[in-house]
Length: 273
Image (cartoon, rainbow, N blue to C red; front, side, top):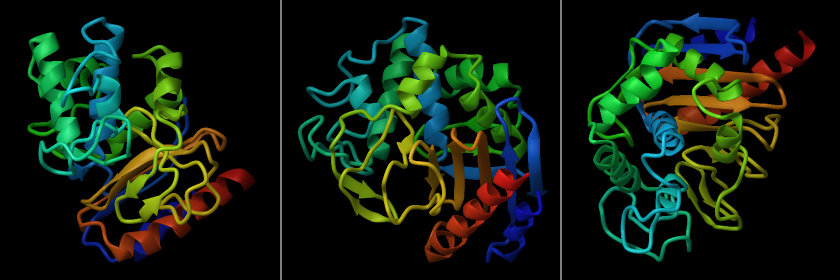
């Protein structure tokens, strides 16, 4: 793919990207794909996937209590627990608003660790990273923000999201294609208030949001996550591909300007290939 070279124009010190299909075939890659980048919030989809493995193993239930009073594992995954953005402070009733919450994912990690009697980072390694061959990926600290990975590793995870081997495909569809607490409004960090602000379980669902970081041509069923370290992972199931991009410059106006045309160009090239 020629469009992947567009990252050369991004105002960042280091960047890497890849486009991958469900069968793991890389359609195009560019940049330092073996370089380890801090993921920031792109850590959350990895943490969510580990939580879903714990669910399928019977260690937790999605609707069991977790987090603040009245909240469940499902609330934490869907950013509707009522916890504040970056501190364990309750700001609303569970299910009432979509409050994007790092504190909620920290509570989720603590809950999974207690339920499995395994530190969350180690559980993630055993449940997700090791089976997928993601040997360059670590999560030492918060499941909300402390992942470190490479584009090469994340293409393996992106392929898994499109053709699950570790989870029942119905579980993955529930997490990535099904809106939980529909009609809930909230703030999409970096893109302002959205009504509704649709999410699955650990994954943002594009739906009709505008403006949006996935560009103008991504299908409404597109799902994924971006991070404040200038990183993103998205899957467009209608296009049959995923795009991973990692950089070492903090998210800001540059990313909101650079990412949408890049994603649109990749999707356009894939459609004509």
